[in-house]
Image (cartoon, rainbow, N blue to C red; front, side):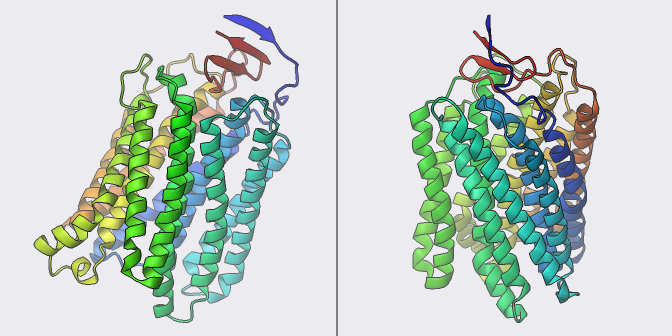
Length: 473
């Protein structure tokens, strides 16, 4: 391996070297309070009442908002600020402004989620919730601008991974604005019927944009960078990935648009929605195959189980989504014709199970695994023995399996509610154990001897920030 020194300030003089730490810590605190922990409490209440409508709609949406923005959003922001400049070998400008977006986003989440949860009792909190939305939109706009500035200044061409990441950033900003408008509309709905109509029309497309547009495409883009580096998998074929990205973006757009048109103009538009679902599932299957997630690896490690299981949950969630008509108009009519889901023509339990498989099984599993893999490296501890994290892995999978399986079974038997209800306790325990490990890893002093090794190894090149050296095989 030859070493060629480059200019001392080619990358930042590392004000941003630990910029990920406050973002990751804030995300851990958020999911163990307003996010997963609050969700577990809501689920216990649902189980106790044997009804998914037993808790207030605003409270459910406040929890969901805290998870999307406080758990997923803050982790993505922290990861992006640290890793993407190293991917592109270009310094992040204005790291202090980048840090300010953390406080803007945190203040926004607390104002928005807090106000939304209490709206039913204190409608006057609308102003506080609106302020929270404005802060979130501002934070998202600045974050996206800072990352796009890195891509704009980077030397060399763009890879397929870059286009995935930029697409995800665009969806992130779109969903932030969408969420703000949706909050104001639901908060000012004149009566319950108007509120339910808004939710029935606009909430599912919002979740599609957040989960499939932002989180899924971001993870697929980052996976193209890191999986070959971590496990010796083959490099992806750029042109094929770019073609699939076009399909993915079109599928997310048509999934959201098809649902809106279906609600506004009739069931003839179901074909657009269902075609988008097939396109989404097919493109993801081809991308997972292209990534080689389940192929033989040359360098297995303790985190591979998280990555492979996460992608298995993703494929399961997409299979369930494709089979939604079979479930709704086949299984329910045959085995539970008197159920509320059969009478309504829509199963909240099954649809929620699909969402849980992708949000916890895929997105959270990837966050847990990738963070446990990269943080010791970023802190310079990659040569030290690290725990296998079997307890968080098993508990998170057990909780997700209980939730997905028994929530679906609530359409057929009320006896499934208690088992679905306890699933959140498994998941929160898993995240607490993992969070304690990651917190300690971030608190440990940086080993200056290897702290510069980052995961910006792409196509055989490793970029070292601390040592300001490019090592080429």
